[in-house]
Length: 509
Ligand code: AMP
Ligand code: MG
Image (cartoon, rainbow, N blue to C red; front, side, top):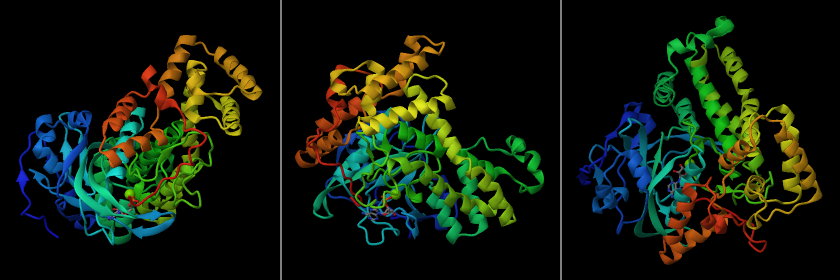
């Protein structure tokens, strides 16, 4: 399939697109242009992301911007593609690919960073299967809110530049207004991209993808920095430990990412291998949600009937996904497969300890402990047990500990909680840091607001049902600085009332 040359190409200031991914073997992508939409209108636009990308605001937000961000016109320099990938969905291998997303190119920012610019909901591609290639306004606004919320919380994530309503309806269980989301990502290379090339490509093609990914995301992995990796095991190492180091770096990013999710009460909801980015960013906000009441078994997704992607399962699932990634790299790790397996398994086995290290350090900080050690695990576990037993709100419990028991935080003080508080205070007293420093650490580690499901739903309902985008704008403003404590945040801190139905998220929108 070739680029549709009839599509108008326009020059807009600030767009500086490259097409590095297109240097890779052809089977990794298809050339495809976005399909036009009837009546595009920008409904939400992100100035901060625009600045990051280095585009000219007047051009991007004006008429030309709308045409580009809806896919009706192509900015100069764009060579649009849909990426091929496979993946394990709920444990089963499947051929996938961008079925409704088209990458315009890679924007080089004024700082020299590279971001994929992707239009999600931009029409069918060769990977659409029976899908229409389109996306619903509510779902795209939801991705916008949550991804920007994650960014505000300091959790690596793809970000959102704009949502454009298309003026067209799409057919799901009922008719819904359509939209296109412009998403930016360090890249869209997934575990599933490696699974695809491992399944359908040869070793040269696999190597090309791995080398490209290393250069793009881990440029520090150079020959001369690999001396230590050779180490005493030199004999059993392959000639080039680069790919083992690559695996180690990807694993490290995932361990840190999943710990950050858990520390914020985030549940991705669909951690299939195609939704795990090699860059270590959170990607693909489908049925994700933030937990209110602490319960490690929490699942929101209507399709996750086996609770595979429950809150507490996220670390072992990340390790499972990394095992699939490891399998794809084996031919590059060692000529002899058995030796390769041995080498990479040694790394993979370290995942639980690595994740735990990040988690423990983060939990310590949430409690004002500067250097949490093994001895602090009991203290943390006891608190979590109390939170679970007493159905306490995850975010607000830490807030109450940080700021004192404000009424809005609704923390009940049981005997167990009071006893625990005594132990905690004693532990804090053992530190040399001042009380003020402890408080600052806790403030910086405990968000006062998260994108709570009922607030997100309220904002989406106003937008989708009444074309009222003010509620989303207000919510986004609050989510930009979630570690501040401001009076106007208080309505956003309230957990859903007891009469709210259990929250369920749905895919396929
Ligand atoms: P997701 O659950 O969003 O990670 O998507 C899983 C797969 O389904 C990916 O290959 C998507 O591109 C594809 N997909 C999702 N929605 C659509 C749609 N409306 N049309 C075509 N493909 C889709
Ligand atoms: Mg996906």
